[in-house]
Image (cartoon, rainbow, N blue to C red; front, side, top):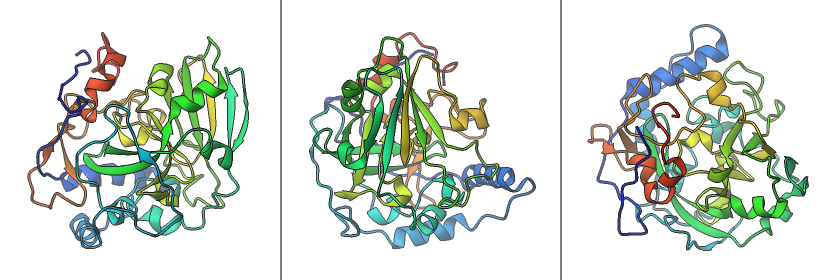
Length: 339
């Protein structure tokens, strides 16, 4: 199958139809597998999906600046496709229903365990095939380009989704300033792995540190974003503070959190989930409803905080609805082979 775009008059962005939910066995199967890896034997029994989902929805409130953390305003982005018209996910859901395995494999673990993560001082090393390598502190990164607010859809490989207002700027702003050489074909993102702050680092769940990567043309696309905040405030620790990647047309695990190193290389990086299960998680991992995960369908999704337990699932659009902007990156590629 080749890359395809699905057009829409609103900057080409695709808008969804109402409601749906991931089957419990899909989520539970992946989580059980993770816990078995961590324990080396049978994993612990999962908490009730339905009960936790009900609690999360009860805690939800309308999106907007929640007043929890320091303000980080951004101007409305003019990048085509950057502002979906979907309803934002409630902050209570977006900040408590997370995958961040350094802090635990349960959805509630990151919010419960990440509170003591030290995000100041913070530096990001720039290495590899660039003319201007070095180390940038957080303050320098924050001043590198004007902050923008972008309302992106997030699609998890597990079959659920959110809509999050991120604050940051295009990754391309940083890339241009460090001047990659002609040998730079890929960008690798290395995240913090500190067992003193992150209880799961050192476990057998994944190969630490968590590493992700993009092809250079993907990294230079204006929708690929370095995010420093969400909902008008700095990022909560459990959402990848103080700086993370957001690539809205790819499954969520491609968007590395708490980045400490950006390396430019001539070779495709080995990435965390691809190394853990190559047959299940490809390097590209573009959202593709026509290529199922080996253990569940990717054709539909449920929206966290909106779709109830028995609601009909909503269709997942190709490239998470960003096909008009990004499909040309994959022209001529067999997306079943390069998944």
